[in-house]
Image 1 (cartoon, rainbow, N blue to C red):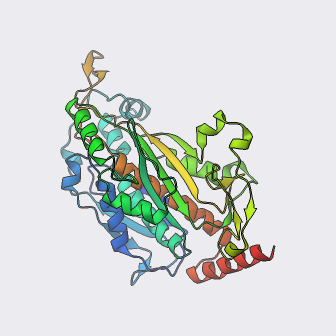
Image 2: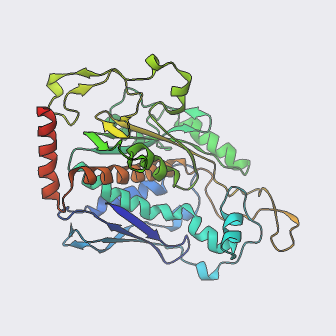
Image 3: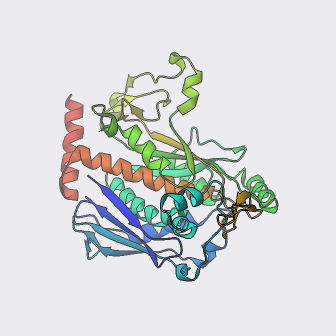
Length: 379
């Protein structure tokens, strides 16, 4: 099993992750991880914290001469804005944040809760996901996240290749699959900022090059769609997840939902083994397993909970009404969320791939990948 844990606070010394179950023999590209970390810090609408931090990964364990050993990997992302011991307690919890529930649960301080609940923790999760993407890429599997909705603005990647989406995302100030909405997006975010408010949106992740049969139908907690939903919903500020058509499938009849099955012998050497679909309403998953089509996952991100104007709250000491505390924050972090969701989806897909192939080293995995596809074609 491929798994990881993180540790660290928003304004602590650093963020840490331990990744267990990663195979031996993969040459790690630290520059690719740092590229993803910079993307997570980007996008229009970010706050002052991103100017202070220059996120870079440090590989602490599990590698020798840049190659994974098969032992647990240790990763760190240092906080330039380390000041947790100097920060004061917050007496007025912020609606929408973990402040109130956490302080009561742990019979402690709001500060102690918000420092760990902060989305700053996702920096090290992006580093972990970037590792997973490098493993997937050795099998021709690519993963990409981007913004399809910013408040009421909507964009679509339909009909675009992953390479086309990637090029557009790199040019867009908001990480959309088009730059046509950038000017409107900037004004939208500026207007929200002037109103001392915040803005959310919808992220989409595509994974291409997947074989048939990752995941399983045999147990509810092993179904890949359920595991993806859990991973995505566990990202800060995510309030909804859908795969393929998602909720739209409930508003159509079956003939307008389910993807017909065809066969193209010219694609028989592909991971899909030649099985094709004229549509991908299922989002690449059927019965808890990949079906050879691109995996499509979407996530709804709520607006950030910290508002400059301070929403109605109470003083925890006096119980009197008061405006919520303000902690330095972003107006819009939707772009960052696209990179974070990309990372957690990549990790779950990599885990499912390792479960399918087995093996402790990259060489073993590659041999078993070849054998899996050969057996599938013979079937």
